[in-house]
Length: 165
Image (cartoon, rainbow, N blue to C red; front, top):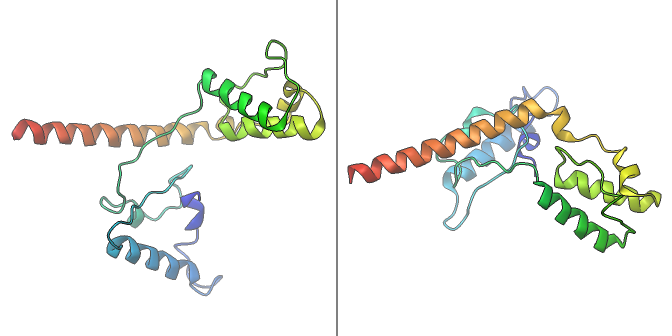
């Protein structure tokens, strides 16, 4: 689930949805505060926009923010190989590998699916892909910076506690 989309109406006035979004937000916050032992809270998002600040308060989540970047060239090839085998595509790695710069794993999968459905090679199928990262590059960089800074602050705090011990 993309967390930011789940609560996009959290600030609802109740005029358009009878207050359902606001009540759901309240229920989630209550659950997060009083959750049963053994429940581990984490979520994914592509943007912090639209997430009410109360969801981002320290202590709501069991881990600090982390960032998963785009696949490396080696990881891209592994993803392509997986889908080539799964879909039984004809593939010549010397000729058929498209330029996948800034592609997500989902975009690589979609390219393979398109090649399968259109019975074309991956280079031709890649023409139907508009990489998400090209559209949302600034936001992706902002998310990365937040996660990296949070991880850095966590490590600095841990080091300070150890130094004092």
